[in-house]
Length: 208
Image (cartoon, rainbow, N blue to C red; front, top):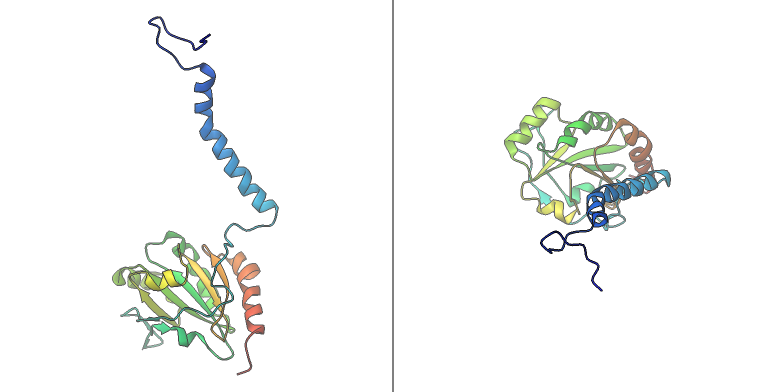
């Protein structure tokens, strides 16, 4: 026996329960995502600390030209290459940034604090940016970088496993990537997350 409800003309109509389920699906989906996020936080898992296949491996082979028109202490700021990330007695922090990246503007004052850390050499990988826009960005906010590599096509960023900006990598004196931070740095994450990772990388630094 067919118990499908019909209208006056004999056409099948949707059951009220099915219609209510369709309306409720977006709310159910959102609640599930929110629950997963809360679980990650309460379990101590930071959703920004995504795994990177390059952590524990040497930096990929690359050479980036400088971002023209940027000077520091009266000298042009150079680009950088893989070989220059092997710095005796130092840890290099590679910050991936772009002028079109809103969170990069948010984290930029924190890079000014990181720049003053005597343990590190801070360099910037300018990712998929227009040079004139990148220059305006640094002119307005200041330049914390000792070197800036212009990756206009994003090819080097792909080799580094970059899929969003900002991202920040810690590289020890042997040129090995020891840590990757995804998202904008804050004063808290600099103090509680990145600085301890720099300490770990420093312990791997051979005597100069």
